[in-house]
Image (cartoon, rainbow, N blue to C red):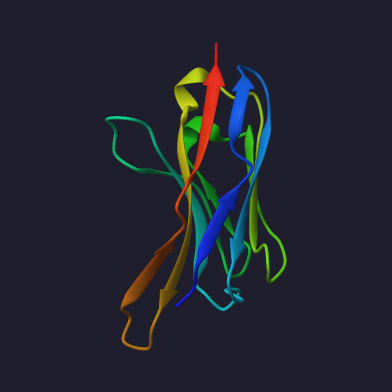
Length: 120
């Protein structure tokens, strides 16, 4: 098991920036990948960005060029720098880590989320 804890959310004006951090209770660098998801009120959770164990990244089209996901150290294995934030990006942002076992079954671990509010 691993516990994930997000931090860095808050209130920011449109066009502003925030940096989200994900802390892990143990090293998850052996996991297949990590990612950031977000969920706005009344909407489904959506992928924002993810990064594989080899460092390959993937972004939702809506955040390309503005958000940057990166790997850190064992205690804080993942960050996401968000710039030029928009009001519609107000949501709870979640840290995710995925592990796949020898049978190909994957296990997802989630943090409790951090609120990002972008004012217009």
